[in-house]
Length: 124
Image 1: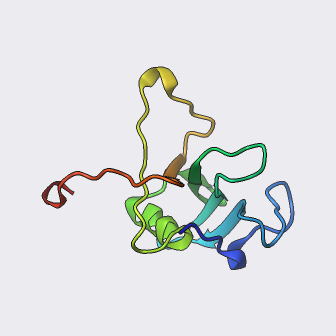
Image 2: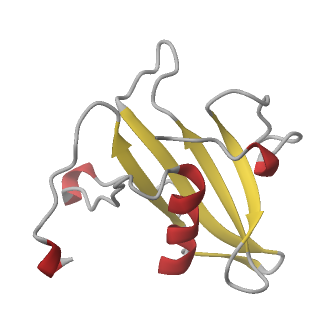
Image 3: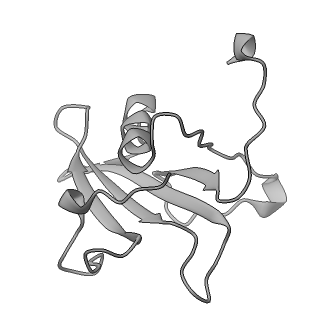
C-alpha cells in the first residue's frame, strides 16, 4: 500500500504541497552521511491524471550538488513510501522511449491494480 510520509513533506517553495494529499515533494536525511534525498511522489490516482501507477522519483543532494541515489537510498525510499511486503520496480525502458529530465534521478514504480510478475527467488 502506498503511503505518504507527512513529516518529510516540503511545505514551502516551488516543491510545496498541501498536507493530506497522496502526492508531493519530500525532503529527508539520507542513510548516506552528509546527503539528503529529494523525492517527488504520487499515488497515480489524481483526478484527470490517473496513471495506474504509484511513483516516486528520488535524487540525492547536498549543497555541493547532486548525484544518482545509491541502492541503500533507493531502499530507504521504498521503505518510506510502501509497505515491507510491497514489490516495486525500477524500469529500464526501450531506448526509443527513454526520457531523462534530470540526470541524477531514479524512479520507483508499482502498478495500482496489478500484481507484478517476479522471477524465481533463486534469481533475485
